[in-house]
Image (cartoon, rainbow, N blue to C red; front, side):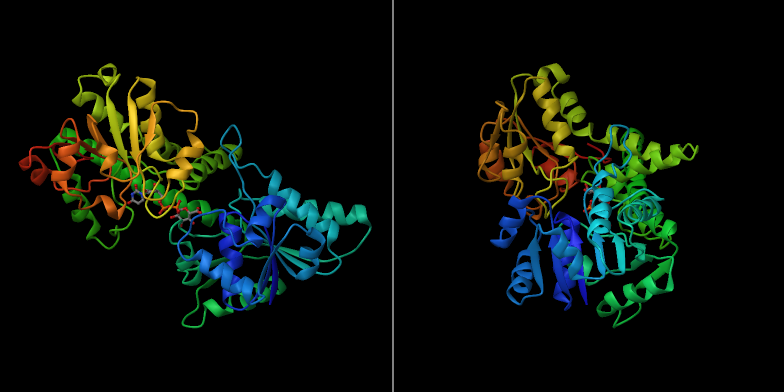
Length: 443
Ligand code: UGA
């Protein structure tokens, strides 16, 4: 089948490359000409394991192309995906201007039936707005064309996006017409060969499913972080509690790891947006708001623990602190809403100096904090520790799981580790003479 995808960001690019990989003919569009040029030279704007190989193979085999030519993109296919960003507005609700402007572009250029598929994460009711926008333009043009609007939310995890797309748990399709359902079933047929993964539902339920999934996962994390903070005060060990509750299949082991807070481009934004969606219909989503509040508080735990080890925040002025891990989670260079940023900014605010290392997010850190003076990016995890007063760990990269503690000790001014991801065994570290604080465990 043929399809076009508007937006070559994370979602659009992964969707386009993976749908080409299963044999469809895909045109990816973006209004950013420089980005399209780079893609045409084989340079990807994001770091995602496995994506480069799929993009280059499918480009070489003629199933995937990149263009800024909207008329060409619209003419290429009956299926038009909208996969542009929905950044948060000032009040936390999703800004729909890019989604609606793509809808307009499609409406201006279309001359045959289209299925317009929304893949961006958008508030419930957006499909109706897209429909109205397209109807309005078609009316202006004085043409009577038919089209369907479908909601097909994505559930990709950064760092595992290619695998998630090619082997999905489920494919959610919100469609109002039999015709749209038929087209979408055919499009995703290659993913349903071993068993049926597609779930059809009404458009609004599909739109809400996306927020429900992310908010549920974020709730699990905030709940565990709350219990971790409580464990510290009660003298319990959250890691034991985690295993104890995870064994109940109704609870499960996934997404109950306590830490220094969730980050990324999805959970923080979607939890906030869901609260705004509820406000808009006059419902106070108390639990959803609490999930966000708990997470914002959790992002400060590393700094607070560090400060209390040094006798107060002010005592950190002039200290040199190492930070391992800058991305919001392993296997990505994405630092959006990363807990590391809250820590870095708090450290700078009290006059501390930071030496940081991340296996892949160094370029991103350089870009974000180019003008910072008290920020040194080290070339490896050990040289990051040269002369530092303490080490804080923000991301659980594999490379940090079994370090050479003797090497670390020989480089650091003091043996202090504040671990936001519970990577080490507290007793073992204490036996080796480290001051070791983690999350929700006895220190
Ligand atoms: C998330 C969802 O997992 C995807 O299903 C969804 O498609 C995506 O958002 C999206 O809306 O596009 P992602 O943001 O890539 O994916 O990251 P996750 O792997 O879900 O991790 C989110 C954050 O939660 C990270 O900061 C991670 O460190 C934290 N986390 C995760 C915990 O603190 N504890 C856990 O037990 C699990």
